[in-house]
Image 1 (cartoon, rainbow, N blue to C red):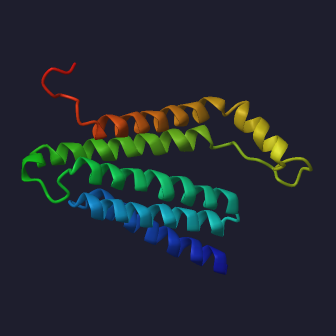
Image 2 (image 1 turned 120 degrees about the vertical axis):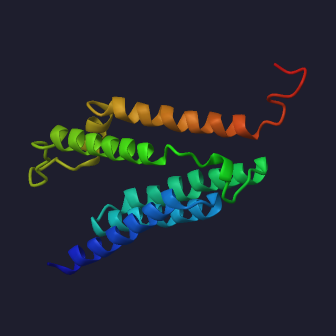
Length: 172
């Protein structure tokens, strides 16, 4: 094993641990902070893979914008940030089974979709900005647009949550 593989494995374990703590935390603020650690660890993985631009974008967009938006939404709405006993349900084991099944399905689909796909970077012209841009906006335009719609939905949801007149008497 090389040094970069060891660093990749260590940062990967830290990222996985932070992600697990994020989804199992009962305090929303702590979950958001663990999300910052997980997203920062993901940026570290990108750095180990020599994808500096993707790492910087990861930090700027996700850590700098999405998590800050989440924390801002919590502060503006004065949502309860601690454990809520009325939100716990007896369906937790069923939810865990469904989550594991969905995870298995997503991993299987990803592995099957990209099993034989590779990019040979030894060919001149491959990996150039023109080639990557052509691939991104050519054959990968649908996933790119789906991601933009997802971010738009998150923005609309944040606006809807922060509005105070929704549900008030006399307003529709």
